[in-house]
Image 1 (cartoon, rainbow, N blue to C red):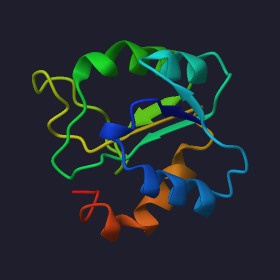
Image 2: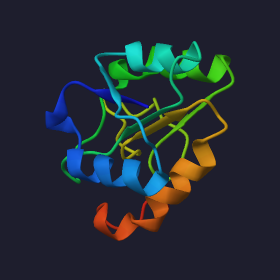
Image 3: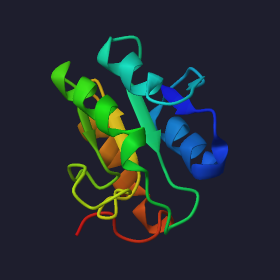
Length: 128
């Protein structure tokens, strides 16, 4: 698993809880920028989960657009925490999405399921 260096935008405690609940034994590798996406696309990492630190925080499009394309072209998946495709048509931020889940494709459903299991503590329902 890869995780952002910048902890100000992510819910570190919720991420740690997800790691424990999912049975991930290794600590996340801290990376910055779209290097996290590249690591997944290249097969060097399997999962990235960005749970926002605040319920109104929305990801910037430029932080994920190119990386999302790389992940998907390599056979992985990238969605928001509710499993919805990222909507890059909403201006400078992903206004219609909450958080990010990027994976090798194989772990995606399990990651979304684990997030859904604790959705009440993640700002209410994650699916529309």
